[in-house]
Image 1 (cartoon, rainbow, N blue to C red):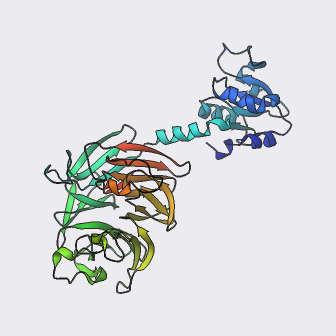
Image 2 (cartoon, rainbow, N blue to C red):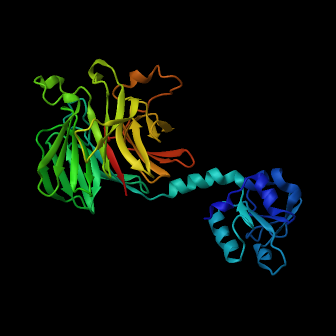
Image 3 (tube, rainbow, N blue to C red):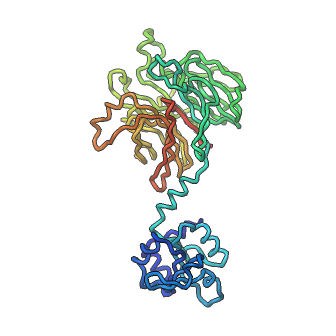
Length: 412
């Protein structure tokens, strides 16, 4: 529907001018709320139910809606006061009424409309999980890790691929996903059939992104704080970034000082999130950030785009904005450092189109760290994802109770 049908009460009065106002729909909720606002301007009410026609409501006569279709010199201004506003919109529009100029919806149920729109979305979501199936391990779950397909219309999902998967991205008509324990990038078609396996140098790769411009992909190793650039056709490593010179350390246990994790490529830029810009996350200094590398000259020091983030993940460019998740705080960050929305869970996994965003939720193993955060309520500790409507600042949550960690997701 045309956005012009949403008016404030003052806009209704000014737009209608000296015309009669007609209310379309004898509802038990929105009709009395409307009359409280503009009763002295209402000429009559219309409703298609013949039981109401010829009767009065609060002293106002109710007619058949056909009266609005009769030829006349000037159209009345119609305010829709019925929940079937989509149907009424079509009737009025076909009759020559102009949205906004000749009719609008009751302002009282704009929120109801936004909720209905959110509930009617029929996205499918591809999710990756890094859970272990071994219940003796801390990061395990009943279902174990893998790649899942979730239908939000039916609230049903199924595992499509078994494995310990971190970042997953769309690639051609299928997907690329990085398998954490095996040290492999897996190539799938759109039905999740495994087409190819690209062997990496070691396990614990977490981030993955592809550049169609250069036909390369980047993989980020969270243990060694390295970024490998691999030619897709030859499968050959053509460059490697050792962030903070940690790659040459002899003591492997101390290699992850920065905890680089997820990445995203756009044009000549490679964006990477990490737990600590100073390299001290293992001693409790979570001064995380988002940095940008230049793919044309990877020897240059990266630009720091955001800092003071707490375990950030999931860099992306959505609707021309650099976004990431300040995971521990549960914040969706846009416009560099702006908190667009807050979620009461460990947020990891991000996709969206500028109005609707998907934010993955993982069980928070360190929720006690949040108990002293000012004005923060209880922390949610189950897995799933939120479908967030940025325009109206509302969300719906889709649980995955048998999983523990969601690492990444893709909106279909």
